[in-house]
Length: 200
Image 1 (spheres, rainbow, N blue to C red):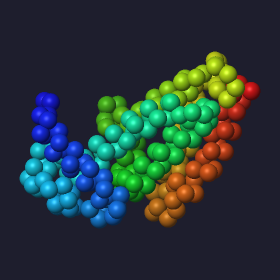
Image 2: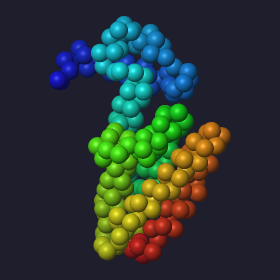
Image 3: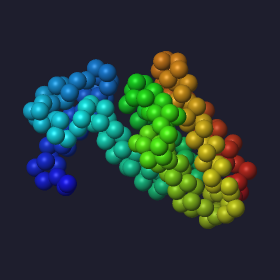
Image 4: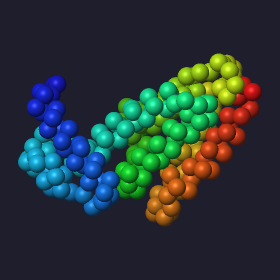
C-alpha cells in the first residue's frame, strides 16, 4: 500500500535521523529511542514503518546503493575508474553500516538457500551493477572494454576481491579502514584484472 504524503514525510524524518545518528555514533550506539527522539516522532510510530533498527539501515543502504550505481555508470572516466568509484563507495557504505551487519549479510548470503532472499538480492544487485558499468561504454574507445570481453567472468572475479576484503575486515574485527587502506590496492587489482581486455 502506497504511503500518504504525511506518512512519507514521517518515514523520511526517521531515515534522516537514523542516518545522521549512525554516522555520528555508529550503528551499535544508536537505539530506536534515539532515532525517534531526534526525529520528533513517537516511538510507537516507528514500528508502523520498520520492524527494527536493522530495517532502517537496510533501507538506507538500498537507497545509497541505487544512487551509487547510477553515479558509477555515469562517472566520467574509464571503465577501471568507474569500477574503482563504485567499489570505493560500497566499502564506504560497509564501514558506515558497521561490522555486525556486514557479518550478518555475509553469513546470510552463504547460508540462505533461497535465491530470492534479501541477502542474495543484494549480492546479485552488485553483480548486475558491475555488468552495467562494464557495458556503459563497451567497445567505444580507449580505456573501455573490448566488445568480446568476458563480462560475466570479469564481474565475478572483481566481486571476489570485494567480498574477500569485507570478509577479512570482519575476521579482523574492523581493525583497519576498508576505505582508508584497502581501496588503494583495489585500484591496482581492478586495473590488472581488466587490462588484457581494455582498448588501448
